[in-house]
Length: 260
Image: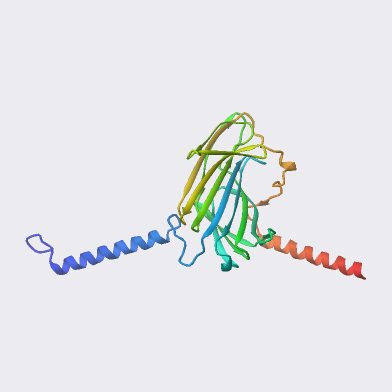
């Protein structure tokens, strides 16, 4: 700065250079932050993804099913990363689907973060199927439920469909944002949403509220196909692998004995 209060050319250039550097650093941090992240260059797009939310379906939690397919089948097998919301208590299936529709459950790794759970897995095929229990509230009789489900994709999604099931015996059922389409399936009412060209890191929040006189799920979990679940907390994928190896070995031994 000169005596008359004007900035000298050299100082001005240095100051401007620092501003440019700071702005560039800020943009770099924003680009790599998880909340506003974009899919890395070369990452495949998800061609279609459907997310189904089923509050108090077979338990006091929200059953969430995420299924879809990546657009480029030739990019697989490969490692992929999915974002799950916090308050996930049970993880039932982490699977890849073959072209013939067979489920191949995969080894996975979970990293817990303050605002999400990061699921790392390997997909042999481009199609995937994940379901888990999300527990943002405690169900009690004669009380209201009010919670938000954050949907944060880690990949660009060309077509995204969201279905939200109304629980049996639920009163004053409401979802924000509102849906213009309602569908019936197997005796249940669903609110349906459709989105196109969703960008990686583009957060979509669904606020769901309703009142129930009871704390019972929509179906009896004893007879539900989704009742058998694995605990999310302290879950070890290696245990499942070990059980599978032992089962294969046992089957092989039985086969040998029969042959003998």
